[in-house]
Image 1: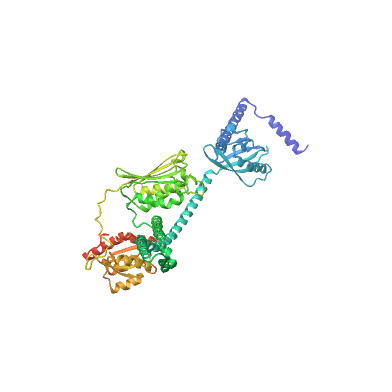
Image 2: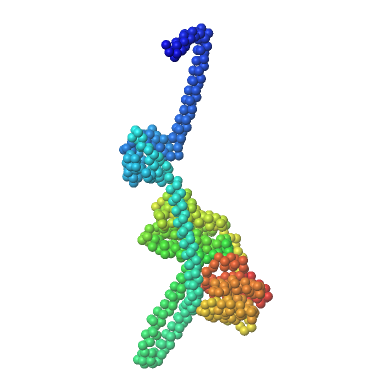
Length: 592
């Protein structure tokens, strides 16, 4: 017998001799009971941890920021989390068992079908964007991404809501477009300012000469008509025709009357150009002073002239503007407000029905306030949009016809001067916009201006000495002819020429200086005069075609000196010169 067999037999013998007493057995049972209870506790702890992990997983799954779908090959929803049901706007119990494409807009169903087919074949690499219709709201944009295909044949799809991001991207694009448009408008404003400046200079002498011709031509034609009639009567028809020759037709009353009519029509056209130029100036010229007494009716009529081309093919413009007290505002900015309102009214009416539609302008004072109304017979605004029309970038117009900034800008400009705006509209029946502004207190009437236009007598104390500075020769000649009736005139063709003249002779009562000139501007000349002769600088009157720069606007804003716009108003100019001469002769400063 081997040693291993002997040891095994000895071990069995020893075990047969184990202590099997009741006490020993009870002890072992107690030990096993403790071990079992410990294992049960560990099992309970493990189960609790598993349940907590499952709860966390369930929360993550159900309340995830994205939707999870398990779809069959035909698009049937087998499982979905709560977020997925919320995205589609349906209870999850109703969602399961239905086909997912049924919740999509028709245009989104073909691309979804291709996406699902590729996912089932294991090659859906690119996400798919689909639109989900929402009652009364813009559709939701969902981005579908293929997660996997399970062993059960179901396709796992993750759906992320891109709606807010799409809206933000759209608003960003609109803002970029609006900023680009504002930049283009600013550039156009600078260019238009320069063009208007160049236009107003020749318009100054064109208008003045045309006004003179409108007075002189009828007198001339009347004199020629009397002369030709007398000569013809004395010579007889045959002799008259022989003396006058081919020019006889030019002396006939009908031709002379037609010549006078052409002159009057030319004057009317020049005045219309002047009105348009003045109205346009309100929009591109920087304001010299931010606020001052403003005429609401004049601002509205300036805006109406600029909006005329947009209105005339759409509606009849009805003018029911009544005189109103002045308001404390910027007349240019008021014109901008009413131009926006008029363009909105025009764009609410289709072209080609001008005889069936109207835009009405009305003003009236009420207590201590001034009211202005712009109403139209256009398409109107839906009630659901009325609360949002003053929001920046909100527009009811079609793409490309508006940025949604017009009414927001109007509200802001009016609020700056204590005004307000309200809109009433009925869909299909038109819109009524009412602007309210606080009126100024009654202003004391200014004393009547001195009589102008007639030559002064020799030794008249009101006759002064005026220096005219302008780089355009026709304007210098015009001003010289106009002013010489009342004052002695010296002219200079540039700022440098004026400086050289003033170094030799500064005995002038008033300096009439063009604001924008090459090489040396009117502001630079004024600063030069102010450094040498401050009292003379106070008697500088600026005239301009309107092309203010920001620097010029800021400079003029610090001065009391008046600015006379071109085309020049002769009566206003002569009044300023009379005030300047009078103050100079008294040894004081003019009260511009």
